[in-house]
Length: 412
Length: 228
Image (tube, rainbow over all chains, first blue to last red; front, side):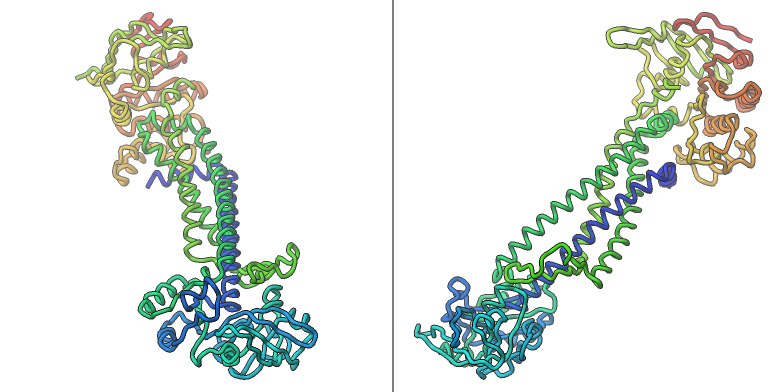
């Protein structure tokens, strides 16, 4: 106990130095927490948006579909799958879909596009397209002739709400098949790829177009209440559907590998940045503790002279490092959390530094970044910074323990 | 057993590069319990080297040193550290108090190292500070005390554990003559009343006058001894 008392008072012998060290520790931690919080938030938003504009957080499809994206690979009986999905707490919603390639034609010309056929009622809960409609309305009828198209397709084909288009695609027999559509809504996501290439039509219209059976779909898009539950939910579904033939469960990472790779690479760069911050923090603390030890070598010699053991001296300096670490990490954590809270509510507006509509794998990055610091990241960062402080205290502590008592009397 | 310190044919040679510098040559000295003894001599005569060797802080090149019959040459560093903690007190020229500890905490420092019970420790040290004339100043930090007061705290620290021997390296060098006289009065009183053995190294004539036995060192030899 008295070692803690001595260590605590030793720290405040040079108040300015201690405060500067705590501040640098605190600043580094705030920087790390805010940076990681914004990264977590941004990645989370990207994943969620991509899932809600795409094939869900989890996609259930025919195992052959992903390789060829051929419409012949379908799920023929979704009822048992849906029954199970309805029992899962983390599942916010699900939507049957048919995806494929088609040609959209008007009297002004034709464009190649990708269609997603949907059941409008099932999309209401989770799809982002509903929020992105800028003209007209979302699809309402699952067997009508309505079409929701991207704003760039609309411009290219010179169509507006109410205009007619013809969609042509290869049906399951490999023959050309066409259907007349009427534009009911135009959406704008900000992504050139989605706005210029994607359109939605009712599910039953697509079945007619492709010659599919009543319950046939390309995939079931599963939406979760939190994208972070993907891995666990994916595993549960894989286990649950293991016995169902021709059913594959894929996470968004497998469906959107480009996005997964981007997040992984960007995340790795963030970790390198964190390590650099930690090295800077560590060097600062090492410098401070080492300086304070070197200044007190004579004093440590006196302690040894009086009978203090080198081990106690070692512990004394390590306690000083621990106390510095505790104060720095406590202040840094509080302020870092406050910073994260601010950016969770207000966001960090990056419009001054970035061009509008940055598109990553078809996902538009919101120029206002919102923080969402994950608890495990908070714990890892705070514990790492604290351990780093203690770790860099070991070398000065060893130096202190190796003080030679004889120098005390010699130097007098 | 009355012999506290016994030096037999102690020689100490320092190496400075290729040059060998003799600091002590063939020293034989016996110090009895309760002595008030001073080592005198010019700078470089070997006073501090002798204190270092007796305190187990340095080893002789040749010869042996025994404290209360225990040969220091056979002791490990840990055992030497324990010996200093329990049997030897140190008083330094520049006091060497812990600046962030109060007078009371400084005085009880050795008892803290000995892990003595807090209440017992406090009682003992409070009485001791009273005895060295620092009653009421227990909560003062070293920076808030005069040189003489700080040295009194150092004296209290050195005797708190009731050591067999107190090694005092020029204890009056940094204080004025009046304060020096007061400090010597105090140490003499402690020597007399508590039978604590004091061994000084000094240049100060006042210390030499008070010493019951004065050992004059010259070029690492005992030049002469004066007993009063």
